[in-house]
Length: 183
Ligand SMILES: [Fe+2]
Image 1 (tube, protein in one colour):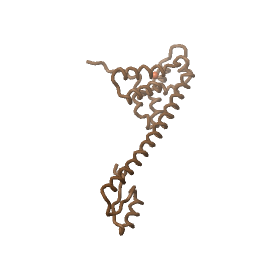
Image 2: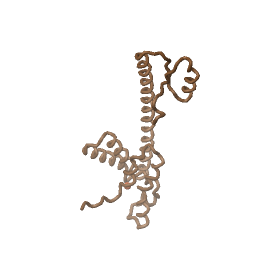
Image 3: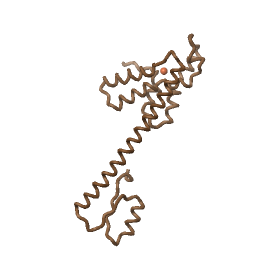
Image 4: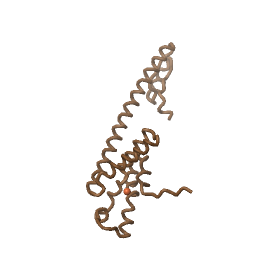
């Protein structure tokens, strides 16, 4: 990550040509000799404050983008549940339950948020399930059951194209997976 380290060029007046060239190559500032330690510290403080501001803004932008993405996906999940009255509110409840369990288990804020989102989106793959199977009021045939069993993989397929939420893929993909018996 060398490119993220701010570079300050220290030079003499006769090196102005080189200083300009280094600024073109990405140096963030220059300071001409002779300079005092106080001047150098002041310059570095200004650079670090500026870099910090950039990072804060970038984090705010990324957080907003992430929230919009999650809202969009949650809307998609709600649209799915509106199609399937039987599971209306199911994803919200699953999100609340598993994030509650993670909280009780002493999970970090990040793990709690991840489990909440994962719960809300866990059945997103049902978008790919045919209406005649998803909404069938009677018992499913073997072939229909095989079709609906594909929804975790379909969900993972939908979400894997969004790198920002890659960390919830296992929740979506494995939410019907059998837990191995403890010997
Ligand atoms: Fe499911």
